[in-house]
Length: 238
Image (cartoon, rainbow, N blue to C red; front, side):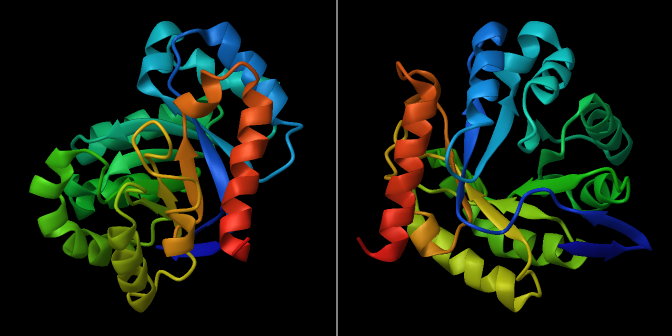
């Protein structure tokens, strides 16, 4: 995918096709490195999302260590939500550490999102709606405005909740109508939060985010491959 924003061009490493983004929300850095190595040879389309619980154990170095362990895409899930200058500074540190993309909140406004996009250092994924009840209370009423805003800026991806497939479907349609047909959708909440593999992808998402059901399993690689096959089977109607 090519994005043109103020003459800045970047190419996304995340392909717009069904896959799993594995949430690295564990706190043990050694197990995170092992799992990153295993996912590198897993059968399927995978990416890694480095969460704050893991990052807070070792700092930005964990991104670099995971980058050294695997070649699959890495997203820094910092849920960046600050003024434009600080948002861009956080994102730049993550990119320079080896992240292919960063995750930030859309509600901070167009100026903050645009500041990160204009870095031109990697993917920018904006959170539109989340999986918890507070999102229904506060984000859902403005999510359509947020979709229109980030579509106009040209972000690479958006976050929509797998726990509410109807919202994925509705907002995926809006995203496409606003010119975001190349923008990928990632959806958290599979298994541990109640969504089943394939719920979001069959509603219009590209990647489903799975964390505990993979990294807390006895064999994370096997769990990742099994859940990926479940998603593909749902898409095929098997």
